[in-house]
Amino acid sequence: MSGLSSDSDTEVVFEVSGEECGVQGPLKRKTVIKDGRRPAVSAWHRYWVQLWGGALVYYHPKSLTSRGQERADFKTSPCKLQPLIGQGSKLVLVGPQDAQSQPDVFQLSDPGKATIYKFRAPSVSAAKSWIYNLQQALTENIQRPPENLITFE
Image (tube, rainbow, N blue to C red; front, side):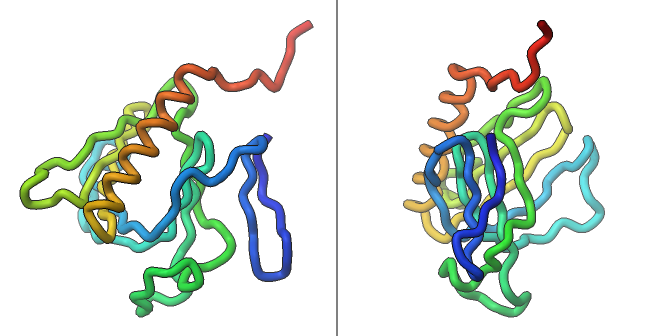
C-alpha cells in the first residue's frame, strides 16, 4: 500500500508499505528519449529524488533560480512518482556511460514506455551510491513480485 501522508504542516512523507527511504539527494535529470523519440529540446532539470522501496519520488526546487543542494531548497510535496517496475516492464539501469569523462552520470530506461532518462549526481560518490541502491531495489523487486490487490474468488 502506498500513499502520501502529512506528519506536520510543512513536511510530506511518502510511505510504501513500511519501507524506508533507501537513498535521497539532489539529481539533475535529462530526457534522452521519450515515447521512442528524441525530444526537440532536452535540458537538465533539478529535482530532489528519493528511492522508496520500488519507486522514485521527485520534488521540484522551490525556485527556478535556486542552486541549493539541501532538502530545504526543494518543495515538500512530491511532483512525480516513477515505479521501478510497471505493467509488464521494469526500469533498466545503465551505469556511467563514460567512466572517464562522466563518472557522475547514469541512465534509467523504461522499455515499456520507450523512454530513457539520464541522471547527473552532484559527485562521483553520490552517483555510485545511487547506482548501488537502484541495483539493489531493482533486484529486490524482481525477487519479490508485487502484491495482488484484487482476488478473483
